[in-house]
Amino acid sequence: MKVIRDPIHDYIELDELALKLVDTPEVQRLRRVRQLGFSNLVYPGANHTRFEHSLGVYHLTGHLVNQVDEHKRNELLAAGLLHDIGHGPFSHATEELITQYTRKSHDNVDELLRKGELSDVLSDFSMSPSSVAKHVRGETYEGQIINSEIDVDRMDYLVRDAHYTGVAFGLIDHVRLIHEMRFNENKLVLNIGGLQAAESLLVSRFLMHPTVYFHHVSRIAESMCTHAAAYMIENRDMDIHEFYRMDDVTFMNEMRHSGGYPAEIAKRLDERRLFKRALYTGFDSLDSDVMKHRKNLKRVELEIAENAGVVPGYVIVDIPGKPEIPEMKAGVLVNGGMVAIDRASSLVATLEKAQMDNWRLGVFTPPEYREKVEKAARELFGVKKDTRQFKLTEI
Image (cartoon, rainbow, N blue to C red; front, side, top):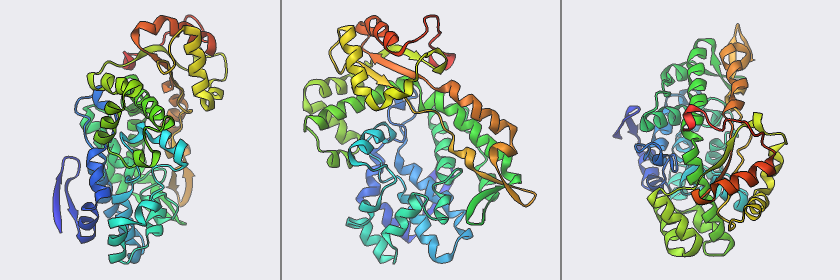
């Protein structure tokens, strides 16, 4: 047994299994993968990594495993510790690109668990890699502890991200939440006594999205990074399977030494000379169904660049998916029956409607092209002319 000091949970105890897993290259790589990608360009303290988050999820998993069969407990603890080993460099910044080329999301960890030192450790403790992988994806009823509507993953990253960014939105009583969570007919649900704690989690998540996770500076830097990576993959300067296993430092070095467009983007990221917003607006200012463009972003970028007289690669279009709050599907036990959380709480129902206000379409370009690109983008997307494109949180 070893005890680790953690700024969020005070002390985290690692048993023999956890210590063996932590010492594998796959888990140690997470020390070099930032939890929040490029958010440190906005919040200088946001340099925490997937490694300490994984320790936090392992710790919180340990508080709930007493509710599952004893022979599954080690599998759940392993899954909690390993749930993020599938992340590529800069975490979610590159996830969509990796999924596009590999058809796998970050929680598809089967291949990583079936080979190398991780496989050896799991074998030594008589655990099935496929069972652990299913827990990671939330495909077992026990795995809902780690991956479901309200899970220990969310509890840790919301509190941890708020702590390291310094924003005041991380006031979540995760101890109360865990105490009030129960399995009911193989579904992880909340007792009514945990409703206020769940409301706090949802409010925190709602506020963290525009101010941290979707802050325009972070989105611009992530988009620049992703475009440089796509350029390298398409020009065969980088293998997607090697890229998938890189850490932040290795990938940035690959960009710097590749020459041309990726090297320029790397230099811009290093020096914080980012593209600027030529267009940044919400649903209420768009006449057309903007979501139809999500599958053809490259074509849209080329069309705007051509109409603006800008070299391709220097116009980036960011169309996030429609906002969703998966936690809305969480169940709450009320008078012996289970109801959806948005029916049990008027506050949660209000958040569900308000989330659309946080969505933004972004078109980014170097500052010298800003006016030309704005005009071309407005014409293509049919943007209403007299729309304010920012809120106080976006300045």
